Length: 205
Image (spheres, rainbow, N blue to C red):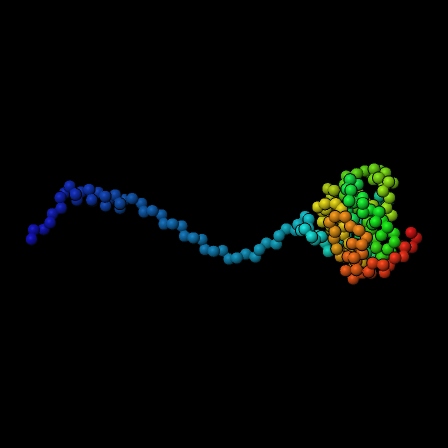
């Protein structure tokens, strides 16, 4: 049998293609996936500037603030009492509505004390003039709205009230107006005197 011969016209182009393929640089291999890095412990989140909703930044808050009567109110000095820390403002209608009842409760309940923290920009002279028409028996302090007490949550609305137990810990918190019945109910729920168990006026009041 006669060997099959390929036409030169076909062999030469095929040879040229083969040579070109040899000269062409091979494509780079796909990058290998990086080896998984060993798991690192999650970084602790930064401390929040304000407590999450429903909780105070401190369970045992500290408060040391100058009052309008040029005194100094130190919350730690009132351990053994139930202390109502009331954030309010002169422009807040619900705040003004609750003030007389808070004042009467402070005067009539020997185991309960109230401190009013005015959360607004107001001059002391203007606050004193305001209190002449809205008198209360408990101390009032003006809070710096740019630097409020860090131990308490920045108020999301007014009034905002904390109930501090005799041990200095937060026993309850109220957003919105409160009544004496609400405060005394919270005290009883936390293990304190029930409403009506202590009705004597404070000595010297």
